[in-house]
Image 1 (tube, helix red, strand yellow):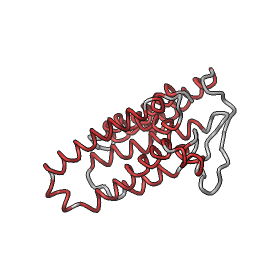
Image 2 (cartoon, one colour):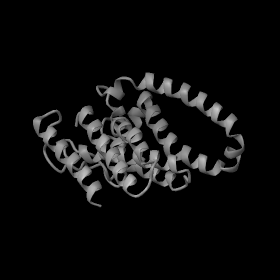
Image 3 (cartoon, helix red, strand yellow):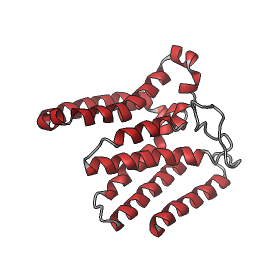
Image 4 (tube, rainbow, N blue to C red):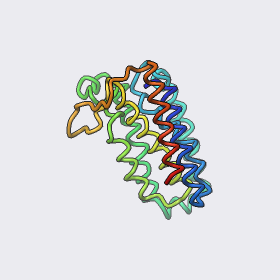
Length: 213
């Protein structure tokens, strides 16, 4: 699907988490509206023609500077907390930062592309369940509610991208490394009118489920 469709579906996912959370007294639930749409577009960072793909070098450099500065500031301000909870922070780093960093490095290294083409090609490893499962494992060790909401929103948004692409003609190899066979539920062409209809249906289902349950 196109970036606009993924962003719209990701926003719906964030809204669904917000609706469900607020109905159950979780006031921090709206934070999912920040992370879900962002994550819903992230898998296409492996595509040179996507918004993230075209900007991944700039994004990576900017993110590195921001993350480094923020890390220093947080470490200084919360030094006692970090020392006491180093295991949680390490798990988060391994589960969230490491996979994205690995994907970025693979996408920039020609030798790695030749040796592990699947890991860096479009709809390769970023369109499998590998990364969201790593993230899901990592978030189990997070105890701070605000971080949990952001993390679950991120995971749900990321998964929405993979599910949405499974409705397109090309599909996604979601069961890697068991198999690289792509799963496509329909034969919808990216950018077509049928995609817009599929997007609308998915958004309706996502919001509807959050209201009903």
